[in-house]
Length: 255
Image (cartoon, rainbow, N blue to C red; front, side, top):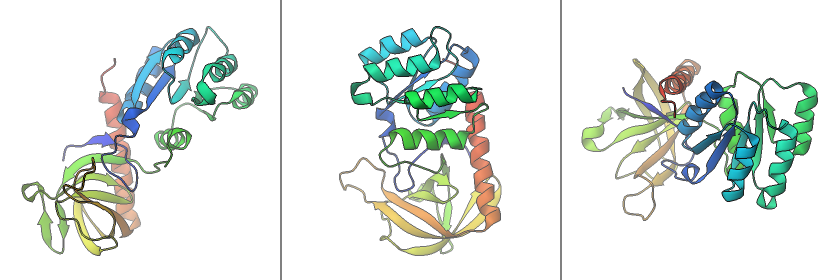
């Protein structure tokens, strides 16, 4: 099974909302900036990176990012940069996250200046993702999902790509099933699917559906939420997703 990472909302699939937002990294450490940029791109955001506070302020004067992630900068103290960014931001709309090994005094100063939070290194992927979601998304997305393509068995019938019915997104709490004829909301049924060589089973309920030709930008199908799944199977999915995320970071090209 070949997978690439995608982060989606619990109750939506193929949303373009994140693609309309622009994130800016300010960090003169090329190694950490490159890795963070690769990760944020896997979150499906547009990402730019600059080395200095001066470059960030100049860019923000042209187009204001939804979020600025401030790492190691040498031409201006982090707290002064945050204050200046907030001054030039229209209505203070730019959210700021500070990352690094900051002491308590600097963290308090950055928070007082308007930072959303200060995150320690090494970054926890789930924490970073949820922090970004809460900071800039009107409906925060809490669960990591991977974009995938795998057959699903429902009522002993295999729904696969030849029939146009297959799972395209998987999280520890559910999956999105592509199908031209989605079931009504609240329909419940058992299903089985294979993740990383292991057959998993769960009971699922339809929590949203997109019909073909209904005028939306969504792929036709239905979002399924697991209402019964074993702790072991859920942890298996969770581990698989974390490994896919890490794999994507290490293999992402540096630009």
